[in-house]
Amino acid sequence: MAEIDLNADLGEGAPCDEELLTIVSSANIACGGHAGDEATMAETVRMAIANGVAVGAHPGYPDKDGFGRESAYLRGAALYESLTEQVAALADIAAALGARIAHVKPHGALYNDAVRDRELADVIARVVAEAPGSPSFTGMAGTELEKAADAHGLDFIAEAFVDRAYEPDGTLVSRKEPGAVHEDLAVATTQAVRLAVEGKTTARNGEQVSVRADTLCIHGDTPGAAEKARAVRDVLESHGVTIRAKTMRG
Image (cartoon, rainbow, N blue to C red):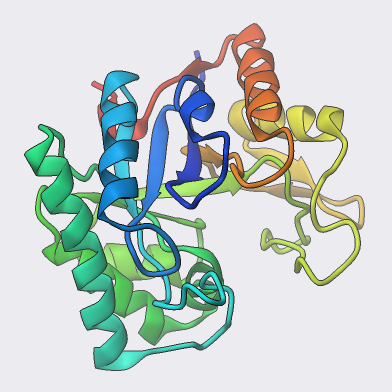
């Protein structure tokens, strides 16, 4: 029987967090870089614990005005220090509430930049390797993110996306291009099932592309996010897929 994790980026000020935490199995919690503060971190961790959801850190470029979406915003030692502070802040709050950081997933432009940038990916991996609790590293399979995780001896959680269009090489279609986001719920649910069961999806040119996935991302900041997430979970379970965080599997 297939198993898959469902994750969502939370604690970013979107209105659906509480409901999403009854649906997903992993939470990527903004920890003060692109969004969030001590209060939002604590509240999101509490809700995650109450729902048996794995707690993860979601650090990004320290740019709240731009929501961490400006590419190449920061790098090197300054980025390392910022990411370390962000992850430590969430880890401390989680520990005080009786939880640990199970995984770390970079946010937004940082994630996208590091997919192809070895130096950036290494900075993130070093931060994960030094974080308390030995968290896993979540990112796109077959990219610099996975290579950096391997280099630092980290458990890697391969991520795919239910509502994003793919290129034939397995990367995501840029959000700047039309059709990058699947607005049709039926398309998203079909993609979710194929990713979880077959490890494949259809690229935008019609080619079949293999995409390794331990976890599927459901964006929590779009209209009707909770309803879409529920539909995705229901369809997956109707196809015999068990929803469980990779970090919580036996």
